[in-house]
Length: 273
Image (cartoon, rainbow, N blue to C red; front, side, top):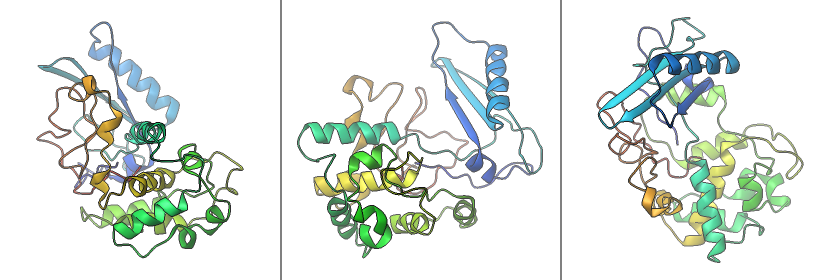
């Protein structure tokens, strides 16, 4: 799920990171030097033409960080202290949880996803339906499998106009309906099943399908920590349920995804893809 900053420093616009951001988490058999990290960051930034921040913890007491690239508007070089927007870190866990639920017989990956999605939307108090939002996908009986594989033909909500409005609205939490409505307003990339097109909307809908299959009545009822092996849940990577200011995809050494210099968006991102 995404993290929103309260604002950039010295002219860095938060939308910089929304548009282009690479976050690399490194684990190495030997202790990387800052110089080695900077070389990697510079190469990554040049290849993707994006801003890059990298952090590496050689020990619990030490954190090394570097940055590369510039704000495309102000041209100021991005610093390690800048707060950047990022997202999509939970997609692998959402997919893994779907596989677990399928293995346990709670969800049929190849059955139409619409009934489960509609049940979840109703439980969340929404009047929206899958068919009303995405009629072409409903006609083609798009499945959870197709959602997870980015083959639904459903557009991404994450477009510049929507992102700009989201950022301008400060840190106000938004209902899932707003994200789905934004996606429904976009032109579909293709007919369902005819292409692979990256869209975070797919993972919102897959999450809703799983919520519907398990009978949850709140996004946080879908606990993605179930997808993490127990021995890893409190080590290098951990996904918990609930709003980002109380849980997140965390990095070893940080406390539940928070640090004193970071403002977390009070948005329940459990189902935000």
